[in-house]
Image (tube, rainbow, N blue to C red; front, side):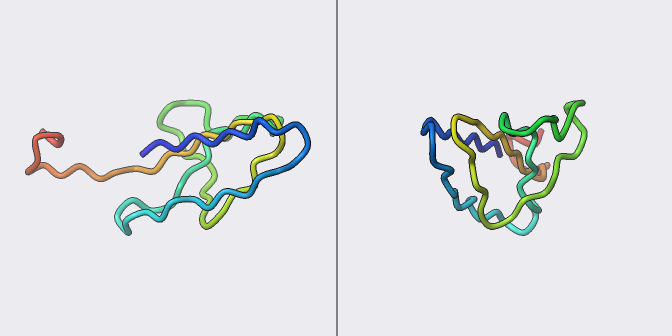
Length: 79
C-alpha cells in the first residue's frame, strides 16, 4: 500500500487519520516528510519509521507512507 498526504495550506497543520491496515500488513512506515530535515528510508528496501493512528502534516508539505502487503502465492498477483 502507498499513502501520500498533502497539505497546501500555508499556515495550518492538518491532522490526518491514517487508514487502518489488516493485521498481516503491520504499521504504516513513513518514507519521507518534506517538512523534516532527513529522509526516513534511503534504499528502497530500508524500513521507515512506523506510524500508527494519526499524523500531523505541516503547512506546505507532503508525506509518503507505505505498508507491506504479504504475497498470496495462490492468487494471480502473487505468482
